[in-house]
Length: 244
Image (cartoon, rainbow, N blue to C red):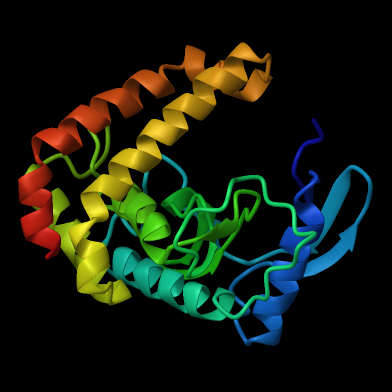
């Protein structure tokens, strides 16, 4: 696979069967005034070119800025603004997405909204990148993934290890996003379903010979996600109470 490279204000990324659809989505976002996503520039047989969003992605290990409450709140508001703009995208019969549609379709989900796919200017989230996993679905599908990653609701090594702190951050994300009561009630189930789907993808794609997923499997990602499912299910009532 080609590597992701940057040349001044442009980023060159590997293209897939879904990339033409993603470019239509990105163009629609810019038409709607949502300029916090990359702008599509060119599309070739193997590579796409999009605009570069200045700032730093929230890669692991987190900086103090990325771990801050301000980063969490601005990321939640950014996701809400993205969903509002993407909700007006007219899905076409010939659209190709890398992920299956998920009912009820309310918007175009990003599919992997996490600190590492957000661009930060200090403590402010100012952009979203990597739309390869975008697909039609409900807002809560993205919010659940984001809460899992930003709270974070994990047993892994993060700066936020106390359950009370994780619950407070999960609640703050939902408040900043202004998530509706019905979606809050189903948030735990959506988080678990997303992790189960992720484990299935890692194991099936690794078995099919995909080198990226084989590396993820060897690194213990599937085991971590299974442990996190158990952790979330064990504390499900506390999470529901916190985000209600």
